[in-house]
Amino acid sequence: MDTRTDSTAGPAAPAAGAAAGDGSGSAAAPGALAFRYSAGFGNQHSSEAVPGALPVGRNSPQRAPLGLYAEQVSGTGFTEPRASNRRSWLYRIRPSAAHPPYRRIGQGTLRAAPFDEAEPDPNRLRWNPLPEPPPGTDFVAGLWTLGGNGDVRRREGMAIHLYRANSSMRDRVFGDADGELLIVPEHGTLLLRTEFGPLAAAPGQVALIPRGVRFLVELPEGESGGYVCENYGTPLALPELGPIGANGLANPRDFLAPTAAYDEAERPVEVIAKFCGGLWATNLEHSPLDVVAWHGNHVPYLYDLRRFNVIGSISYDHPDPSIFTVLTAPGVDFVVFAPRWLVGEDTFRPPYFHRNVMTEYMGLIEGAYDAKAEGFVPGGGSLHNMFSAHGPDRETYARAVAAELAPHKVDDGLAFMFETRWPVSLTAQARNGSHLQRGYDRVWQGLERNFRP
Ligand SMILES: O=C(O)Cc1cc(O)ccc1O
Ligand SMILES: [Fe+2]
Image 1 (tube, helix red, strand yellow):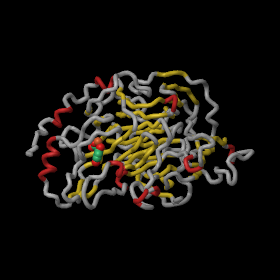
Image 2 (image 1 turned 45 degrees about the horizontal axis):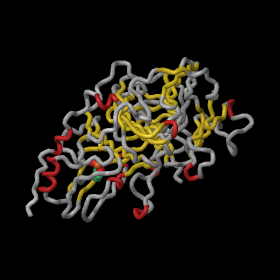
Image 3 (image 1 turned 30 degrees about the vertical axis):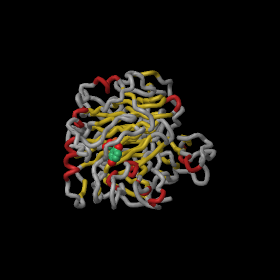
């Protein structure tokens, strides 16, 4: 496993009083707003913000170093096989157990599975971007659920959320017991301050917060929006590579975990827990982001989609989109349509017409998507449910069958797909929202009979 550290420029400096870095690897450029990261997907990372804070040779010494409390966070069952077992040990100023009771709070536009507000619908659907939220909306308040499948209580299935937010979380910290959160920014960089340290996720990058890990979201660039896949089941992992070989697609070394940084300020902080679909809150007189050192593999991470090694056909035909899988879990795949060359001979090069057992939610981070000439816009999304017939729109079809098949680079956009094994049911707000495009079916009208026997 790769244990190097890596750093990339971020938009904002670490908070005052927070120490960053574990003393190894490359440092942030002076003046640049950067964080130090620890590279490698699934690694047993370790990090200490204060030298000596991480115990050596045991997880739970009689007295943890520097007067810290040792606490394990398990993301999988204790006896899960080694290859898929996820847990981390945290060395913190106060144990998480020291908190008053949680009380139920409102959850705005956030919903959870089972989704039964609207009858499952076989129609192809497409949405414009979410409208701007009222001033003072933070990331948690700005989560808006489109739909999903499965059941949070069985840790099965997934939810598709969008978010729009215009206010940083300062004294509110969030943790999701129901699943991991794959966050896909579309506009505005998110500064995620997690129990494991800070991550800066800009559009074009994705961030993953593991189940149960606490974090807050600052918006250094102001109003921000994007997409979230909440995976209720087995955590996302890198796909097997089979005949591709030992390298390719998303490379493990490009996944960056944070390094320890702690907030020791004493002030009132609201801790919000998402538990079996509901939001609950408790109040502390300090921040729960008080972890001084940690080690383990149940960690947040960042990945730059532009580092995806796109593999495709160099002879003929359009491969299935599974070739673009970044991360996969039983029932949920995350797929990116990154810039790539199309060189297929005697090939209809855009995505083909198709009907799948899988359900596809697609979003656009920037630019355009090669199967749709118009109407599929950044911040918007489309849902092609189980066996709904879809593919290139009329205009894309007409262009593709007439195109001269010279090598062509598709590099005018960055789209992604949350693909799921189970049909997606919508929330009422998604089914009835004013940003639902009426008449999406029309993009396939005018695909006339050309049959000339
Ligand atoms: O645009 C889509 O519908 C996604 C998609 C892309 C592709 O290249 C092949 C199949 C597919 O479902
Ligand atoms: Fe599709």
